[in-house]
Length: 428
Ligand code: EPS
Image (cartoon, rainbow, N blue to C red; front, side):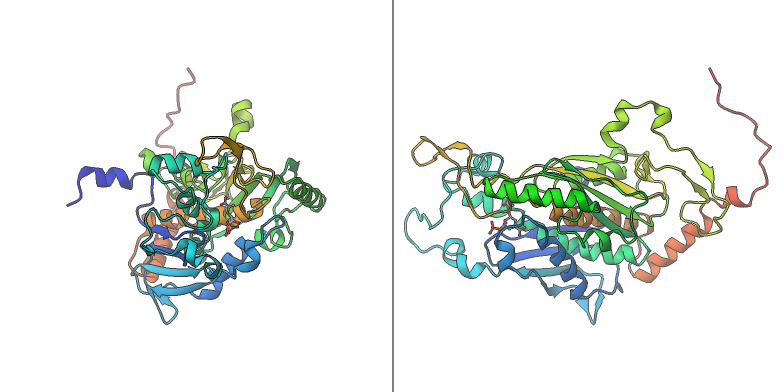
């Protein structure tokens, strides 16, 4: 019997679609396990590998990306191209494992106090190194950085690619683009291209403003020469959602909170905004909220229930519930903390001041962060779809969605003007 804490622990984490990952950056490989999928969802390795390939791209990635060819092996949960309803597990093997087998070998060599090659004793400011060795009582910060490395996000992207396949069955599309990098701000096209990723992926920095992209790449090259790193911001957009995912009734069901938690948990993400985000705090209410209109073109089955907004400053969420407008989130990523011109630190072997460890790394991973953010948004939205529409099979879920949409807003669509209740809120 789960105790009351089991429910609290379920809290802000996802409850209908759960996922976990395992694996160290230079270990044998990464594993992702996704549980809660309906049976009968078509899955193929190519669609997962496509997303993994996108994550590896971007001007400013390091030499590791030349070694890896991230792709999945199915371990469980899929048969003849369809989910079985059981946990889906995939393996992404690390090609670099061949170069690290002695460093990362799980078994002890039997040597006392076993210190291995490539020990990390000069913790990098900004990374998990120091807090991690203190908390876990380790002498080698490699025991920390191997899991803190953003390599783990490959497994999140694989899990997210499965969630995307489920969302695609309902016409939901998720894309992203870089809006700033290294301090260069891009001009955001309005409207955004559809599908968004076809345009964004064509740019080496996943930016829709070609002039800004050129300047971003120049700054990446300059930062690389200087042994420095760069951060930036990415916008993630999810289109095709029905009104009514998430809920206002309890804090842990609010979809904005669920999205923010998952986005903030991506390595190096320091800010999450939805819609106008922080700038809403500096505007008048009349310049923040989105007016409501009837949509004369909307018939039965309309995913917005027959209403629409001329603007989407709320970013597709009101009261923690989807409005049917696109969800628009913006994340801010700090510069990568491994610097080739290192900051000052303390050598843990001597206690003396030293330069922080320099390990092979990226100058920037902002373009990749967009792909990772899409994946985690897909996981949250797939969870919210399963929460509302459930079902053990895809067919059952589709029937549930169709039934909901048929009835959505019907009372307003079909009724003549309702004159029985003329009460209005008191202007006082
Ligand atoms: C990454 C692999 C890592 C890093 C990067 C992300 O490979 P390696 O450490 O072997 O060069 O390039 O990790 C970090 C940015 C980090 O902070 O640890 C990947 O696959 O994305």
